[in-house]
Length: 178
Image (cartoon, rainbow, N blue to C red; front, side, top):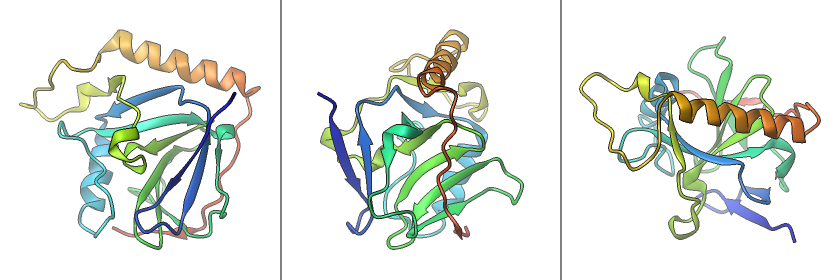
């Protein structure tokens, strides 16, 4: 039996439904994720975007496994620049980070902070650790490195194949400034 979970923003006005299990969980340390988290921390966001190690924890689902029962009218996108291919999406009601999406991507990277801590899927890997600031040392609690990244991309490809190479769109028309 397939499970369906409903997640909410901090104030409870926005809902997102996920079906089944994520295809992977990952803590991203790329420059753009860390810069977006830094810039968004300058405004009052409802939930933290980063982990203790400075990475951004995500729970990745195929887009066809994610639904918005209330629609997407209460969402706004934040981009590092007007031409950035990546957007972070937050709620307009309470500024809860909801997901990160890559242009042309078939998956959605939901912010792990959407889940209550006791139900949050544990992180499986770290990605883009070569981008961490000089002098930063990450503990060995999560796998990282070239082979881990190769496995990550293999999971992305397998998810896309399972979707029949479709790339569903998520309409978000509002902008969020930070």
